[in-house]
Amino acid sequence: MSAKKSIGKFISDYAVLIIFTVITLAAISPSGLSISYIIQEVITRLGRNSFLVLALLLPIFAGMGLNFGMTLGAMAGQIGLIFAVNWSVAGWQGLVFAVLIGLPISVFLGWICGAVMNKAKGREMVTGYILAFFINGIYQFFVLYMMGSVIPIRNAAILLSRGYGIRNTLNLESVRQSLDNIFMLKVGPFLVPVITFVIIALLCVFIVWFKRTKLGQDMRAVGQDMVVADAAGIPVEKTRIIAIIISTVLACVGQIIFLQNMGNLATYNAHDQTGFFAVAAILVGGASVKRASIANVFIGVVLLHAMFIVSPLAGQRLFGSAMIGEYFRQFIGYGAIALSLVLYAWKSRKAADDARSGLRHGASGNGNGAGGQA
Amino acid sequence: MKAISLKNPKVLVRSILLLIYVAVLVIMLLTGKRHTILIDNKDAGDGSYLAIDGMSVQIDKQEAAEYYPGDRDRALVNGQKHTIKVEIFSDGKIFESSFALPLGQDMVLLSVPKLVAGIEPYIEPFSVQLEQASAPEAGPPQGMQFGGDSVPPAEEAAPTAPALIQ
Image 1: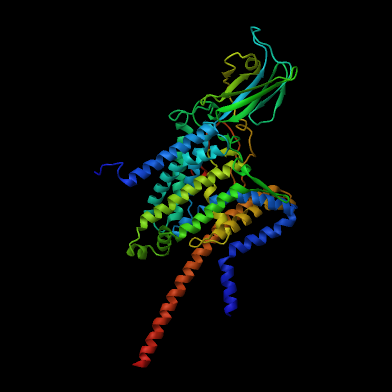
Image 2: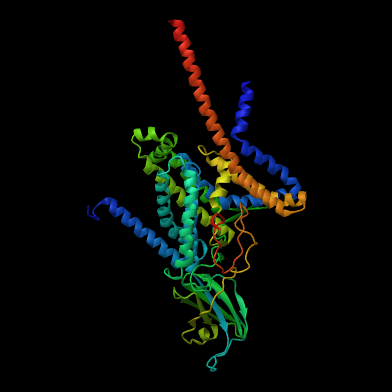
């Protein structure tokens, strides 16, 4: 009975992970892709996306759920890249330049995001999601109207023909894969962007170290119970704001790493799906709204991207249309988030019910006992 | 209101960090600034110098390229200080020189016949309306789809409003 219960618990804890693993493994054969091709693609996408997904960890530790507000950091990173292209700063120096430009913007946006979330405690995810829409409007105004009119843009090639506003797509040729290509290691048939992975590893070390610091412990305390943390003298609101600021700054850097690998910047909508993608990846990796680890990030990125790689071709082979695979990909991406949130809500409610019934049984048991004693 | 004093160690440390931040930004701008050098091998309009009949030109440690009269090619360089090595085929003479490019100039024209003849200035600013290589017709015709890692079509039109408020 207890073995049955533990299997049931394992399945309910890792339902999304199990579903993804089964679907991905089942789709490999019909896709017709070679294993070496899939592995190479997964390595590339791990380097491209892991940093962004790691940015979600600290707000989860602080009990703020999945930070959909990370889109704000992505916008800051894009502004940094626009200025790097504007000033023709190329190579890895261009990336550092973009980070240095984006950093203060992301700190400011993170502070706004954290302050707003403090006014909406318990509803951080939906607040972050809608806040990203709001800041997106300001970003579009800034990039579409301010750049070239109020903010001088010296590179006419990136301006719209009317003389102000940035073009819909920017060629990031000057910084394209400049981080990945610093040291590309050939391991058998695979190319590994070593420096990108070193930076990701450093971020992992930082997260592990940070969790052990006073601030990291405060964040965990706030994440477990805000009232108790407050009673213990922890500045709850300040700690939550710091968690969001760090997440936003990491999202800024992550978006720059992502875009340097892509080599193109869709000025007005590259950031749209950043939050959704990162959230889907961490959930697929077995994380939940309240619990996440570094392992969840890497498992999630590998599984989600393996599925993204194989599903269009599997759809084409099985149903005669690549679009089926594309729809499938979207359906699974959003489905992973929905399933995970539903499971989380169901488990929370079940835990509350169990606790309540336990209390009731305990009370009646105590009553009987008392009666017996009397 | 508290007066800000540089004697306060906190303020001093923050000021130093700010200075370092700005310094790194400037260093990145100076060392990473990309310039396009147009290497030119053409006669002067007034006949004051003639194009070189066969030579190889190497900028910094880049691959050397061969030039014949009327040729013009480009080299992309980062930073301001560079070297040029010219080897003339006819007599085997080698000219080596170093030059600095102005920070604000994205593109310059370097006339090798002028350099070899010792005529100054052999580097002149060159302006052209650059078109971003990928601006139109770049990427597949779909948006930044869920994990698609693709780029949307590029058009000069203003972006559409998000689906939520369309």
